[in-house]
Image (cartoon, rainbow, N blue to C red):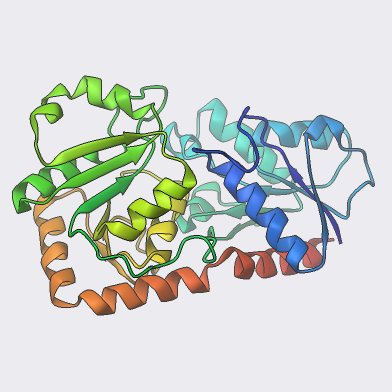
Length: 313
């Protein structure tokens, strides 16, 4: 097949040099669909002509309108947690609903989104991970906690959507060190919580490149992810941490299994119980994390999406 992955048009390079989520997904689909023998292009929506591709795969709702107005059939993949946060009366929900209704089929990275949009065109399709890049190594773990995230919600970059407060509290309670890595945007949360600077357990890394992020996964002991809202269940950082053999304490929807993760609400005592369970069954958690990542490799996800393409065209 001749496939087009639509550039999300966010001004981030593909592949991203440091931070970027949709851009990473687009790039991984391109590489892995090419491994499967398909011809894959990345193109801006405005530069695509009708009939030029067998499949056009779009990742941003407003770009679907461009394709629809040009009479170009498309597969839509939603990545926007704001459509859930703002509710069904919001513009962002209605825009995504319009993109779904106009699609051949729409891929939801969370089961809760399938129920939320309640359209026969919606199916659950989880994210993947590059297990050739993110993988365990023989480096001795340092026993510390790690969070990798871009915090904020609904235009407020200081909002603690990712649960940094809970990670800091758990590290402090257990006397562990915590590294929080992510884009410079996380400085907004830090400036809103300057008390963290007096906490000797916590260090920050801003704008690490992908090699550095992999090194953090490989050298830290347990990944923390007490996020309150994600479009992706699992999201990319959960899968990357798992691929590097990290046990995880965090939240994922009940409808999605993720072996290697202790499911904990944003509750310090729940998270502490997870820590002690991981200590008792460390190797089992490690093995389960790696198995989960292997099952959800981008190569496997690409084989599945190609089957979906073939069904809808």
